[in-house]
Image (cartoon, rainbow, N blue to C red; front, side, top):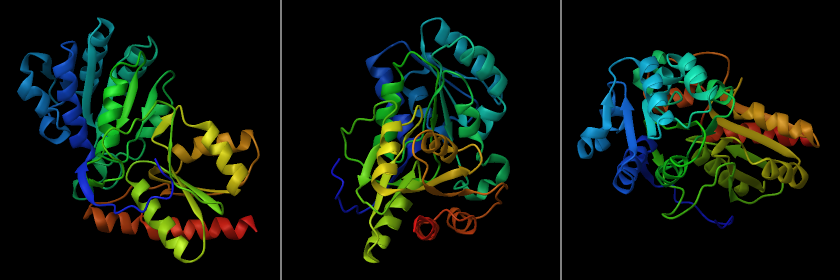
Length: 321
């Protein structure tokens, strides 16, 4: 993708919708695709698959731990098995089963968590998943991705379906800005440099990619040149792109809709420390749970807007000097 693109950032479908459409596409091309859901199919959009392929859809009820174990069994028997629920449920309730039935035996189960982060708003903190990436990346052998828009998740679901390892795909409830064009490819372990710059680099994933683009464009108007990288592949991540950012810009801001502790920022900091350390700032949820409210008010209160990325960028530049 060209790095001098001006983004309109029109609002498109939620990434959970792209997941549902990708499942249907996979189901049509391969009769070994099976899907398990935990009584949330309307919300996770697995209902699209269930409608077209009812014989390959299993409703497991409100029992994420059992669902994960069932999905792992199907994957171990040769099926392309997907399990889906809200991230807060499938990662927290199903963690032991993810560890024992998928990670430890290296079973290629595909785990999809929707309603990630705090942008689910009115659903409240019990359903907000702000620890999911920390949990998923802690599982040995797991591939973990966090797509920014409908195109990205559609392509990543289709790619990861055939990957011979367990995978976690993070999806959101809120409608997401359109960043990519149809046909864009998203290799495992890759990233996308969306805007070029030489003063600092903003690394983001998911919903925060669009906010980072908005921040970079506002900074440009002030004469600050910010590179923006969509680090959609959380584990493994694009180490080369990080090293390049350090050597060419010397300052990094990581922005994510996740706890700062245990999120992508930690992995980027480890990569930076292994080469030439540079100044860094972190935009994310700060060691607390959020509360119920509209998505807009929640993102505003907890500092997950372009405004907050701009503030962190100016802090890191001040320290760089």
